[in-house]
Length: 185
Ligand SMILES: C[S@@+](CC[C@H](N)C(=O)[O-])C[C@H]1O[C@@H](n2cnc3c(N)ncnc32)[C@H](O)[C@@H]1O
Image (cartoon, rainbow, N blue to C red; front, side, top):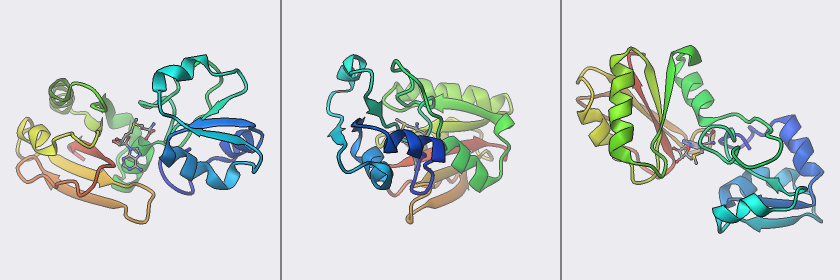
């Protein structure tokens, strides 16, 4: 879907326009809205475990890029999308070659913080996929105080906000949809 409005690629839009059965989160369905044909059956996903047994013609919507903590693990063809990683690094003008991806989404946050610290100490710019419960202050406290730390929220949406601080003075997220970028950038 891309991670925000206007990021649906022509390839993904073509697949959606040809679909008769679609599954997606409420946010993904909203992002795809204009491309979904009127006669298409659309289901909001309630049980992610059930997705493995969908019929072969089902189209599953995944926000951002399906291979970045998305639904690309499901059987079938993957159509790539514009990820929150791409948008965050574009906004901050950091080359993607410097990125180390750490996912804290629905995972052990303490482990993610330890991994992020290790990557920053190695000179990488950490892109951390958060979830609403992720504590930016705990990450900041684990980093050298001068480390730059950005909270990138609602990327691509009208409410987009990119706030840059440091390990000593980290910005706080205002909402639930955010990623964190940390390192020397
Ligand atoms: C399940 S992951 C999916 C990531 C997605 N596949 C991608 O490529 O961006 C969901 C997390 O991605 C991040 N995310 C996705 N879209 C975002 C956006 N528009 N702005 C900020 N963060 C976003 C947030 O950390 C969110 O909790």
